[in-house]
Image (cartoon, rainbow, N blue to C red; front, side, top):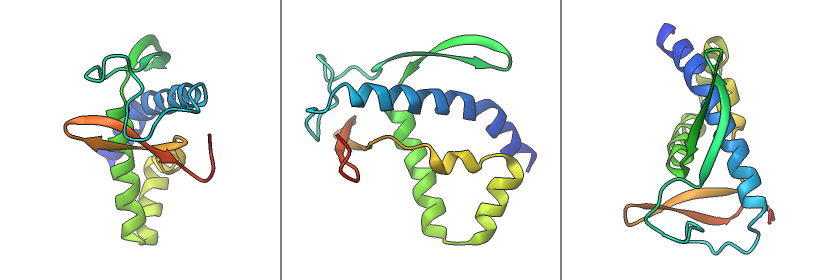
Length: 124
């Protein structure tokens, strides 16, 4: 429980800022083709930078779709578990917000690169 609380404290501000950035970035690119990463150099990983406060200190971090890919894996595992005790655990440790952090598209892997999937629920 202590480890999960620590993860919530350290990780949530960063991933929340990254998802917010990605939502805006994707909204500016409604014609972005699925299966691409939308970057001029497809081997690049960061799509931009976002400022946030971490442990009371203002910082700026690179926004990496890979971070959303990992978040999706957690969300998918929680969904597959279908167990109410998982939700109780997330709530008790402050990690419940992880379940609602989603972009308008899923991040997929093509080769060893992250690419954008199709728009979700008619978004675009």
